[in-house]
Image 1 (spheres, rainbow, N blue to C red):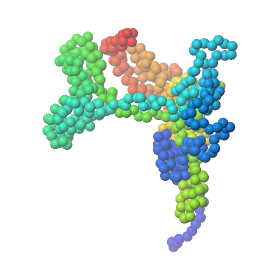
Image 2 (cartoon, rainbow, N blue to C red; image 1 turned 180 degrees about the horizontal axis):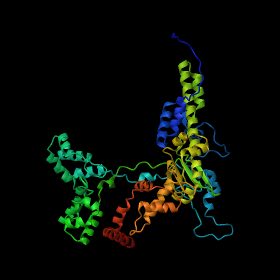
Image 3 (cartoon, rainbow, N blue to C red; image 1 turned 30 degrees about the horizontal axis):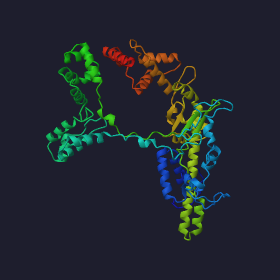
Image 4 (tube, rainbow, N blue to C red; image 1 turned 120 degrees about the vertical axis):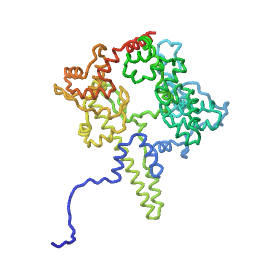
Length: 523
């Protein structure tokens, strides 16, 4: 059979992701911070895009050449108080200041015929601008300017090291040792590597490390938990031989093997309890008080508030939505002025890109609002009852309700936050697995996890609930779960097993510790 080339026509369907569609998908799953950065880059690269605020400011620009209101009065020179008529009534002041001062007195003005109280008078909220007499948005005091800057652990140690170490070589070693600290304040580097890097002896580096261990907070530059606790106990003058033996047997203390600890420390039961109480008052992570600067708080994308008709009002956060517009006038002026064909193509491409970006942002906002509204509609019981009212929900259920694919719902809820009367939650929080029930009504996995936590918190120290008992109690509540599921949920809540909880709650130290805490609360 001879081989030959020929042309054939075939009809078929295929999804083609254009660059514009890829951009829309990318914008949908972007969080607020990334979206703002993306918009800033587009504003810098596309001359036809502008912020909506800039256009609004331009429309209110007093220097637009329009004549001001004409009056029959002759012009008055500024600063000529003798030729100015001073207004003393509220209506005249309102006309001159461009604000309705009467609104500021409505809340405190007595009703007609009612006797005036000594407290009647000016009552304006100068922080929020309520009543038209407060500060404008740009005049409000900047409270962040009065907040002290958080001092990092590195800065705190460098200031102390500059006083402690006078030799420049020791200061270099101290800076290298500070670089070897972790977030908890432990030295995790190698003294030999520091010595080799700086070209000095390891004994010299260790000597500087011992001196650096005297800095605040106490326990800093420790190389282990035992050394950290030892430094703090020595400062308190409590590092006696019995306490040293206790520090050397920290694994036994974690296992609550009090019989072994009494034997190795050579103390009785009461003394051991006092020693353990002393240990619990120490700081195992001295560096966490000087943690890194806190990250930016999560900005809600959607607000959910209660409406007067006992429904829920869902609205987008306008402050988090970037507002960009296409300057059609500027684009038309450029097209009329360009002569070269490549310039015309450039203007057309930039105009098309700007129009598509504004449409993509609008579609993004609409999709997020639709998804959030459907989540609120299905999780209405959570807003009323709390976690116990959380219902099973998945992406497919929301997608079918609003007519989009579940992948679109996943992108719309990724890194998006919703502010509810019960707090700020990530949208992904409301999607939980379903737990079967013998009554046909499914339960949310998060609600079951919360029920397990509540059962363990309320258990009797003398009758600790095992996983099998928890399974039976859930079965009586018509919740069908396996024992391994209960163990998995308990581990996710960081709750120890029943054996460890029984040992913890029945130990004499635990009772003494709880009694000390109750005495502190009563005091």
